[in-house]
Length: 577
Ligand code: SAH
Ligand code: SF4
Ligand code: F3S
Image (cartoon, rainbow, N blue to C red; front, top):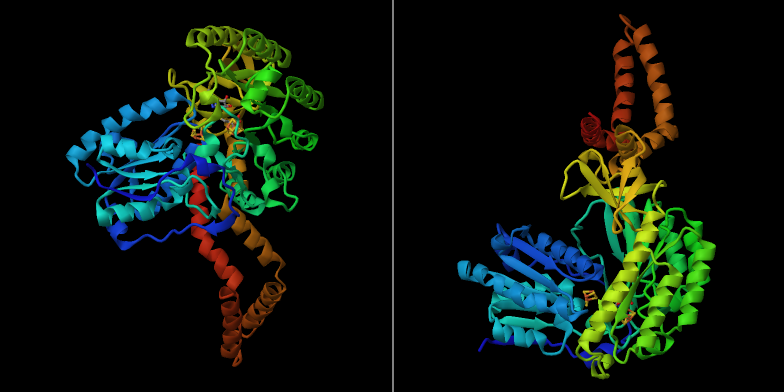
């Protein structure tokens, strides 16, 4: 039997607790023993699930990098591996068992190998303990509330060499100043809140991520401003329910005001996930309409089109209320694309209720939809309700899928002939001459173009619809696009901005101005005193002023930046070549 040190094990019942929340700063100290261990060793992270997990991966990568580990994307090379799991549906969960087995080879090869299990599955009662019993080489089981303790926990493990479980089911902290290594240098995800208060009866998320806790708006805006300064083009604000953002802070903070503040950072593209229909109010629609950098694409999960089914799901709106919100949004922003999530086969779902879902989807005219077959999650109320037979769920799923395909095709067809701005993510996997990226309405667009346009915003005319993706052509010269992008980066480059700010300050500085005038005067007198007795004295006077200028703090600061700026400009010249 493996020895297990239990610091804290999950208790799903406790997840509903709402403690007073405190803002704390991350502990980023790296103990000597960890520093020594990390030297020359590699970490590997595999993430499943939603963007919340992706963001946790970036934070864990931040901590591991600060400890001195190097990242690898090769599983076999890993000295520390993290499996970041998702619990939202059964099939998401099943994957981890095979995955753990695959790491056994690492342990056989390397007795110091550390395997860490993280993510939402670890928040389920008893799962961590059972996994360690089956796979004793698991070193750590970490909960979603504990990702910022990864280095502390690895250090504990290095000292004691026994498996550790540390999974809290609720948290009284919002941790700030987290290190992070972002996975993408153009598009970033920013958490605005953690957890969820809705407790929809089918959903495990509130149990694995706890009650809703909002970050302070100043922390969110500062993170976004830094991304803008670093040249990011797109920010997606994240929360399980973004629309209730800030209400727990009880100081008047709300999502619409936060959205406006982030839009004002000047980010090129701004989106947010996920919206809760009944809390998406007029003020939020108005904010979306007001700022041109907020995308006209809204993920608006309905889950079911039937009021009675919604009630059993614990969703706090009716069919009519949902349709009213969707209508209002389209009235205020006519080119808005709406996408959704739908669950079929929810306990007790009748054929009539299912038909209500089909008719609602048609009426809204979604641009796309994620469709799921209901999957019972342990500890949630719906898991004990009367289940729909699998063959009925599958048959309904296929009918829904056919409708969603039609709606998606219709929306895509309507894009043909129009021009859309595409943020290029990279070359297509199938053809390196083809670039792929997303339009502002959330649709995937492919077009022929040079690889150097990766990360650029390109105007593309749509030629053909392939339902889930579109084929288009560039309507501008690729070099013009690249030059515009370089100009964008120069405008946002911190170094160049600091250099030009200093230059401006120097130009307006009264002291430097008068020193400059004195220098001209002194130079004149020096020239006139040539061959005369006073020459030595004039020379000393001239040098004294010159010295004052050369040692002026503003000018010294600018000189210090000079070389770096020159390097940067040469790099830009190389790009343009
Ligand atoms: N907070 C978001 C996302 C939750 S999880 C929201 O409220 O929309 C993403 C999607 O997974 C959900 O929208 C839902 O459609 C689906 N989902 C959640 N639990 C599920 C379950 N037990 N079975 C099937 N689908 C589920
Ligand atoms: Fe789950 Fe509902 Fe919260 Fe979304 S709003 S995370 S579906 S409980
Ligand atoms: Fe999955 Fe957890 Fe996200 S259950 S969907 S990783 S919040």
